[in-house]
Image 1: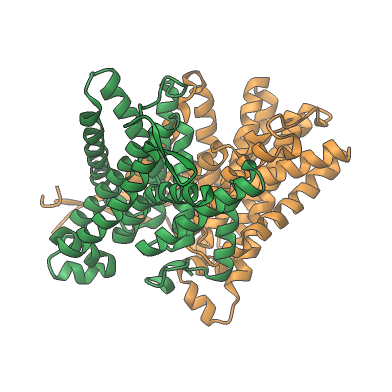
Image 2 (image 1 turned 135 degrees about the vertical axis):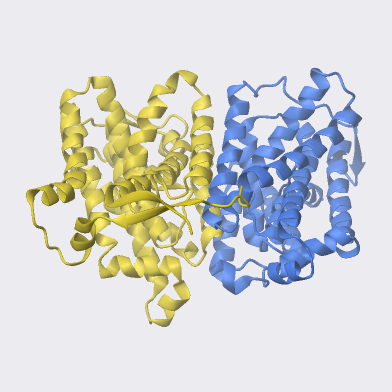
Length: 288
Length: 338
């Protein structure tokens, strides 16, 4: 039972890490390697709002999400626009920007116990015989909410439909009047904002430090590779495989083996189905 | 800007000697021989001469520059066949740990550990990454980015090879200058061999894989086997660098998987100009001394590399080397349009 509950929660956390990355990549083909850095930058910005500007929590969190989303937008127009269409250059630019953010935060001395965010609600509840605190339930709820929201968004709003159009065929999308730079930058902004949302709900569970930025990026990549980058269902299944695998490994073999799980999952998936479990779309031209 | 009417344009003409030397190899004077030999001979003499004149601190910097230069060359070799690696630290770390373990547990002498680590590093890297050679572009970059970080965590948590403490008190080079010259000579050899190799038929296939792998496949060439070979070569070069560093520090620890070793080579190649090897070498010769000069800034250093990296990719995408090469081989003048 506790395996089930904590496995689900770990999986939802992984899905939250991956959702923004996978959204931006699926729509505009931009692999945002600054994802982890934006995640941890959100934590820093909330912390600054709380402790230096004295804003209340319910204000500083949404403000940070908006801020980080805007930062993604700016990254697109300032850095990525000039190298668009050259995958290597895109990758170098986003990765370098991400590392620069993380190293600057580390240099500013952004680690240690004082940098932690308060929980939304203290206390916990028992599901069956397993004790779960409210924060973890909120994480699971947010994950569920985001999946439903994204589904509705990309199916029933104009921008969302434009996103899907871009994802399916950029040129055809252009010919029906969807401007690719605008949608590309919006997708990056959305991806960054989703990273920020993940940070808002997940970060209060632990301490914040720059190193977590790399971890988030790694898990996002692992989930994306296992599930197939462009499909949402693949992403969810991928995160559940890795999440449950990790919790099971921690329980039956020992916590130090948790890190092996994503690695094995990646190797197995690549050996059996190189395009990811659910990645059929763009399979031939992009991956193999 | 784009709307403004251009009144002048830059006209570029190849120098006569360049045109002839590229195709017919007819050289008519000492001046022309000098013109052709100088750019090749200068770096060789400079690198062989520098360890004699430099102080011992800057000699160490030169050694780092050569180690990073080797990693950058191995990065560029992979990039030439379309594999964009973000994890040179993996190659370096594998070589370093092989050499370290052989020296620590089996007490092998240094002249055995380094060759074994070089070959073993190549084999291990090719074997580890062989399931991944089917991936292209971003996907390959993702996997290589993750590998060193995951291995670092694995060593940290499982405690193999000394865990967080690493293996220390390994055998050093008998004399410091032997170590310095070993790495300098290997670096130069690597540079010239790679530059030659990539223009041979073998290298042509590799570059064709980068440009259009389907076409190469339809020519009945097994591209996955070629990519695995490329990984072996790149892994061997990285493995040598790692083994060298191990004996240079007389220590091997988790730091060999650090992000520095992954980022700096990419930065060097991007700054110098990818695809020509000379660019990667030049880039590392610029970046490493620069980073030593910035050492006082501490953690800011990596942020500054990243800024350089972004700037060079955006502003000068061809890289410094290609820019210099163009200036060297061509006349340029402005001509009136229309």
